[in-house]
Length: 192
Image 1 (cartoon, helix red, strand yellow):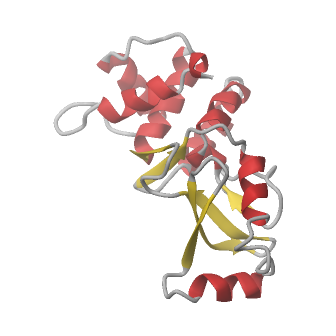
Image 2 (tube, rainbow, N blue to C red):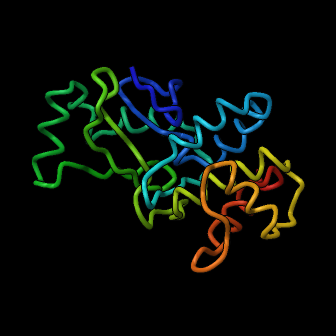
């Protein structure tokens, strides 16, 4: 079973989806659950890794996305691990893309877990997505945990406290806050 804290155990099998990395509304809805459990929040933030990630900002829930993937006409015949592995390797790339009902594009690749072998994430430059650095998402989540939903004073002092929480160096030099502020503007309950 997956141990990655960003992994969403609620999506149907055989899909593996890291909602904490790739689904904006899921993040907004679930940040309050960590406000009392700082240690778990830090473990979660450490699991949001990678350099560049794509965030889905559309209206489909993680379960709806996984359901549409599993029921997609191109994938329906490949729901065993062996069949799926063969299917994604046929074009020589080891991944496939599917377009869902809201025109968002999703990348499918072979996952690491026996019962969740269809790993999905939003496609680059897809409808209803934006690209960001994982460190900016970690800082933005930490910022909301530390300072709440209504704080819109993104001063260097407050951003540096959030950066310290996720064990990143302070702003200054070549480190800028533009990416974090962009995600903070998205991580706003009023947007939903």
